[in-house]
Length: 68
Image 1: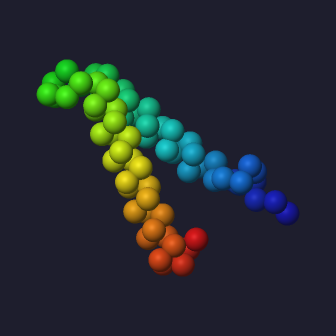
Image 2 (image 1 turned 180 degrees about the vertical axis):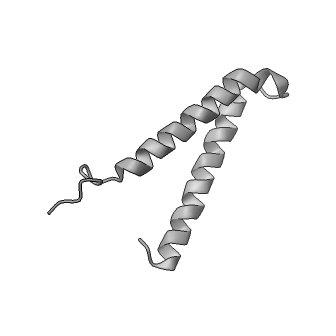
Image 3 (image 1 turned 30 degrees about the horizontal axis):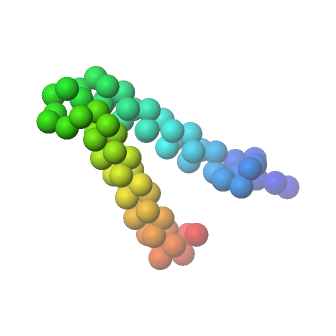
């Protein structure tokens, strides 16, 4: 029986959570971005870089611990 949570080769719950987190970061940048010394584009880049770094570190932890 196929895994209903993984119909297209990727975990749907993870994709939806990541998309929601990205939207929250974007909304925060739009709302509070002018309070920082960086431009909106720089804040988007920093937020995206942080999310990528967290994902890579979490992935490495999963591989090392044997879950992937």
